[in-house]
Amino acid sequence: MPDAVVIGAGPNGLVAANLLADAGWTVEVLEAQDEPGGAVRHDRGVDPAYVSDVFSAFYPLAAASPVLAGLRLDAYGLRWSQAPAVLAHPFPDGRCAVLHRSVEETARSLEEFGPGDGASWRAQHEVWEKVRAPLLDALFTPFPPVRAGARLAAAVRAAGGLRLARTMLLPVRRLGEEEFAGEGGRLLLAGNALHADLAPEAAGSGGFGWLMTMLGQTYGFPVPAGGSGGLTAALVRRLRSRGGTVRCGERVAEVVVRGGRAVAVRTAGGEAVPAGRAVLADVSAPALYHDLVDARHLPGRLLEDLRRFQWDFATFKVDWALDGPVPWTAEGASSAGTVHLADGVDGLTRFASQIAMGQVPDRPFILFGQMTTADPGRSPAGTESAWAYTHVPRRARGDAGSDGLTGSWDRREEEAMADRMEAEVERAAPGFRGLVRARRVLSPGTLEGLDANLSGGSVNGGTTALHQQLVFRPVPGAGRPETPVKGLYLASAGAHPGGGVHGAPGANAAQAALHGHRWSALARVQRALARPVEHSSP
Image 1 (cartoon, rainbow, N blue to C red):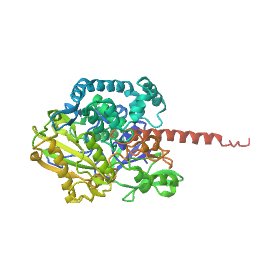
Image 2: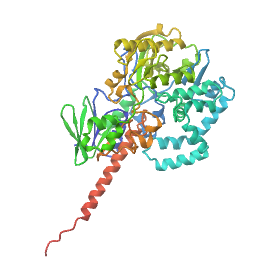
Image 3: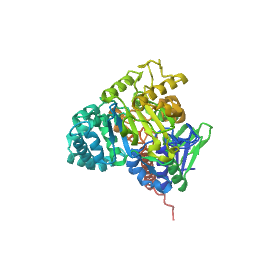
Image 4: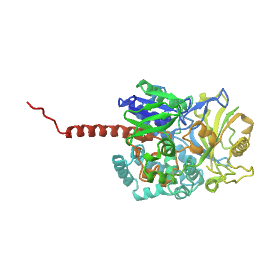
């Protein structure tokens, strides 16, 4: 009998399993798909000569994560690669806002858009350097981060106090207007906020955009050399070296609860897999509480709160095998791993508003990845392995464009939306379409079919908006991996601190399981000591 069963071999599940194995526990990981990795996998499905990341691709949070750093995955084969520039936002007139790993180069790029914007960038970076270490410590530790929070509070006071706190709560449109005279700096912030589901007018979008931009400034947007699955492979190798097992093609259908405690899981094939100490679930919060645990074991309040659970935007993705480098009009985009395409902050607002109204955007905001630029081994010399994704409504009520898209995402709708995205790239890179050797379309339902955690094409485990963060994630009063069922822990992006490949939800769940077991063992000892001692007669 394993000490722990982990449901799901995504990055959070594998991190949790590794940390439990480090503590001497026996661990078995059950994964529904035929290979581990969740949304961290690559293949050659577009063209045999091209490596394509199926889901996620760039990992600034992984590079900054103390959780992953502590696992020393370099010893298990993980190697990182970086593009010459981190991120670019090209403009029709040939100018380009470029985020470099050099503060001075980034500042020079932004100075072209507005006098003083370079100095403003340097000032923002100085604030970041003051709060970076305690902020990341607080972000990646269990909620509430008592010690890390105290260090962060002291750093925030030193870096501006309430003024800095106000800045982080600003909508990203307002933050950009306050800090930058030109549109270059504003778009770097706003585009990064829309990596999640935060519109330019959303409270807190400024803080999220600022965090992602500063992570890129310090750590870049690195990729695993050879494909995103290199990160998964390193986690699996590390786990197996410590005696852990990973079984793929084993979908868990039920968490078995007896006496208020999770004691086993049951697979779709009917196999009962016992768990001696804990069950950790790297699945979405709705899937755990609606599908895997019988409602009679859960408080009615929790189930009622889950009715208000909000998913993030759906995602629509296209992969390409290109016969040559992307012919960007703005030269600065050629060296960047990630390229954002939108007509200014107003274009981002229009895009997000259309999604909020249930309309498929007519001018989608494009996040474009140049994978061979970031990692030259991804495709033959002189070519490019590329992808792009955009957001669409989870439930479309209409099409802001002229294709009559309904959100059914049948073959016609998939191809029409992919063409719409290619048209946006073509505007910034005339001749792009002529380079397409092959393409693959991954609509929201396809993404969910490849990874059940990506429900409806949502990739962040729930909205990044403030009302579903910290103590509100995944429901009010939560914020920690413990569940109402003893010995059962939520170890996915549905738990604090949320989406992104950084391993923190898995690490937090593992720590909670270890702590819970120690307290249970102590309680058993105390109960034994409290029993009256029977003395035999002489």
